[in-house]
Length: 230
Length: 385
Image (cartoon, rainbow over all chains, first blue to last red; front, side):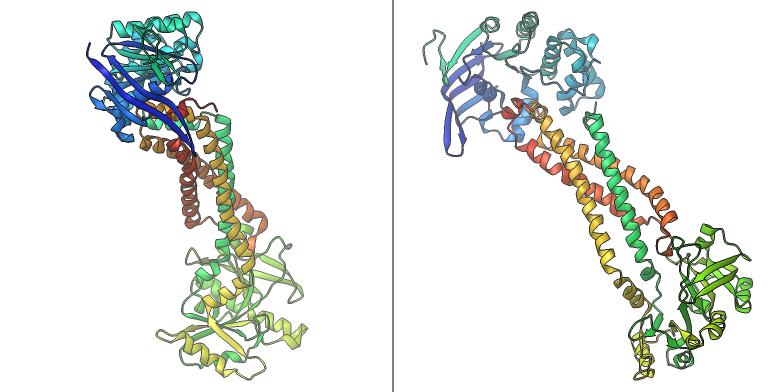
């Protein structure tokens, strides 16, 4: 399996005034194309920071992050925004749908940045909503949907541009058990059937068990599969 | 779905708050419109003044009269084409609320020096021949439904007694800026009456108005007129009609300045009302802006959305305010009889109000834009408002 994501000696230090807080230290990680990786760890272990770095919404203090051959740590903010729009699909814990837009309009949002025609956008949105099983509720507003349905709309928004990687930050953290199962089944399907590379962060072992690969973070260090610091 | 639709939907996300903001802006713009209209009305005399007319008044104050005998002397000054004279008549029509300007004018010369007051030949002839006749402006006639033959009763104050004047005709203003709310009565009639009741005040003129010949130097003509009466009991001060009007305005300058200041304070209030709404709105949407940035929306997109929302609300408020200004000004004019002038909303007031709301729309968006741009995506996504 060719590596899609290469993380080399990545460190992240947050600075506020004169106080420096190291969050990640010397992280090395490779994620293959079509991989489904779960990152686990306690609060403050740096798992969300690592996810943000892979997604290009934060920049490392040191090291390289190469995604699909591009060192995203060296891209400008505007280039990074453009890169994210075509390469990354985001799934958040609290769905983060726009409440004044319908499910259809929420899913259509990322496509407004493309050159697709209205008709083409409609086809893409309907296809994405079909995959997540919500085509019949495309005209519903978020407040008219259950938590699980909202997260499915958020997943449809994440996949509508057919990105290389899906980034999921605690995707089941706000859901009941049944809804969480449905979401993880859907994500497994996106990985196996649609060959999406998925990097997921969770603190829930059951959710993490649905991934193909599991890695632990602790105090900013990435532990190897056997649980020892790398 | 287009970004414009998103702007519109976002603007009305909190319908009551947006409605109250629009209403607040509307009321403020309406107050701004009324104040600017009143300030403009104060300046209408200056704008209507003619460049080829001079005004000669008593050197100390225009309240002091000048002798009628100056008329023939002023006529002889080189550069003076024609001269007329007039007195402020004052008095009360019905009560103090029904104020309009009343002047006693020389029936033979006044309408030649002031051709912008257009009257028909028949009315002019009657005004000259009928001692107690008067001419009224078209706006005044419309307000009180005056027509030729009607008798207008005035209770005198400067000239005590009950005065009855018969309307000989109605003048029409030549220009939009020309006053159409005045009443002109026959000076000769007034003078004859004064001779009988207050002989000591007969043959007194309030001020003279000279029309100067083409090419004459107004400054030189003024000096020559004043030189004629230097060291006399009634020295004169001659100045252009514009300066004369400005001098009158200076006496109420503090009021005008206050109204000017207040009108622009209102613009500040509009900005605070809108800025408050925009800041609340942007704060509530910190996480949404972060999500939009995460999925690829650039800073330019966010600026467009926030600015668009701010401008939409400010423009809706501005349009509402402009529409409300008209009935407010009409209502104010009908009950206040402000200065006896015809109050009307000028184009410059509308343009200023529109410019102000656009400026406010842009200014109110600055802080929310700054906040949206400076918030890191990772922080914004975790934001709990």
